Image (cartoon, rainbow, N blue to C red):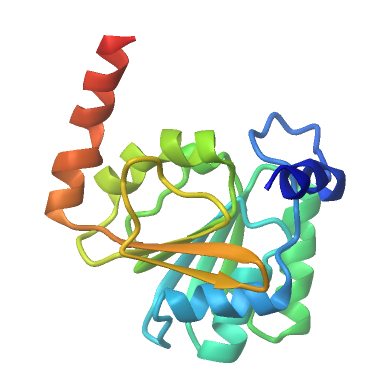
Length: 186
């Protein structure tokens, strides 16, 4: 584990856009596994928070017929995402927005994908539980959501992928109220 964590930042591309997460491209085999774990369907609207070059949203549209949106702070990544969508001929089904993921409008999502860092996932958790509808699926590459246990966890090529479904029970246990209570104890 230590070796894996030590190697991870070496592959990262840190951007000067005030973001909380370095850009680390997800390999295509992991992208496809994430989408399959999230039970992707052509009727889905996928949102990728911290979308980088858009590869997850583009594959969701190209291979599975879904629609989607990606958010990223870096204008260079957004430009790459738009070019990747153009090359895949899916510009009519995807959109990329230069915006902080904490300010992203995610209410339309039926599937949310993440490849963030553990502390970012935890800070994002209340927003996910507040803004997403019951039944919305969340898939995270490599990092969990703290004490919110995943509904499913799989290993693909040495990478752990996590799956959750938004429910009233999850909102009660891990939403805003829980985070406020935890903050009060510190």
